[in-house]
Length: 123
Image 1 (cartoon, helix red, strand yellow):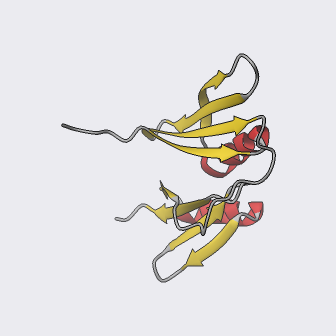
Image 2 (tube, rainbow, N blue to C red):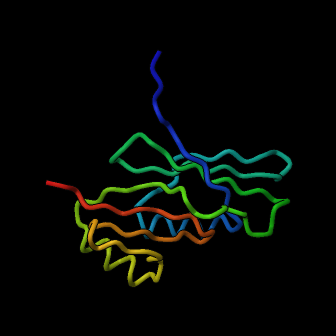
């Protein structure tokens, strides 16, 4: 039996803000969406040409308050071929929340506080 990872879900308060963030910060674009007929939820799948893996953003009409994401001990990781340019972009966006220069990595926060790890391509 084999399993293939296909997506990870994050619930978001402001879908438009999150979509703009993920496109600017990580180049993720909307691939498809599912909108409830009664308007109670919208699910948007984001991705890029680098991987089949998708990020699923879920907006719930009846959940306007911030999500409790615990102690932020989980994260989604992204590898970049231009670490310096990525760091500069994220620094300009003001979304870097933690850096570990000894490991050569850093983390950014999305608008809802989810942590996203950025790693360089190792040669």
